[in-house]
Image: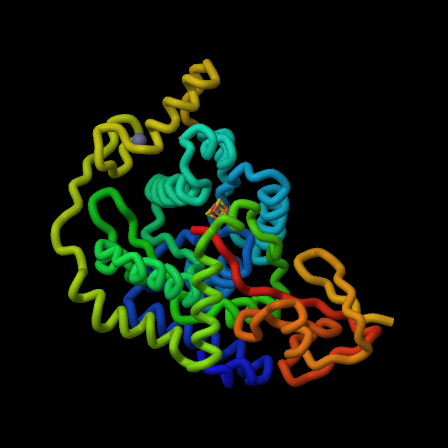
Length: 293
Length: 66
Ligand code: SF4
Ligand SMILES: [Zn+2]
């Protein structure tokens, strides 16, 4: 995004940021003040800033934190989330994945999948499940422009065509799924960081230890090098995708999903991937412990 | 006295007395497009200076993961 935005004075920047968030919410018809919004929070700058700004704008927004069981990193981020919820005077739902299923390090070993891929699966599952159970109509995440543009770039480079029909800042509710939205999709990471800093939001700065393997940082740096040479490229790359490419690839056909026969969440097979994971965890531990959900 | 910079929870020393924020980021291998310098509690612009004795914090806004 143009550098001049960051040269605004403090008050101007904050008010610009808030108005622009509101505009994005309206532009993509993400939600209204009648909706009950569940903000997926990690303790990082984006999600805490999102929670802050939505409440400031008068939306009904509670937080949801999933403790991933990733050692010190998870402990420290949970502390930040609890403190911030208190400061906001807002409700935070906290769920411990180690009690619900198993921590990410154990799930990674159990499945021999990349940590981030298992993590993405259990996060999506729990966001949706908790939102449905507790009557939220929308799940909001703090994904920013750098997140969206870098994953778009990675998918274009691999000509992952399916992705090109799926990546929109609003995913409408459908059978078994609540609506999912990304109100920060037009802000750069630097802008959300600045908003968090100027509001004295105490976010977790350290990275998840698994993020070192994540290719997303590499793609973000590449986009930033292009941006340095040709300012405005990052935003244009993303917005022109939304305008020109997404409509062509948008998935028309219904996905073939059924309610999981164990937990009831939408699933591509009789038993959903998370319930299958749970069965493996239970077998491994040799206990008959059941889900707390 | 070198510049003392707090970066991701660690203190780093840079053997300079005075440096432009932009230059400081370069020394740390960071792009000004994705990082911010906070001096004595205030976010400063790339063209501002930091000096020895300042309380300096650098925020790298890039985060990874899915
Ligand atoms: S970096 Fe990967 S494992 Fe860590 S929280 Fe993010 S998605 Fe999960
Ligand atoms: Zn299930």
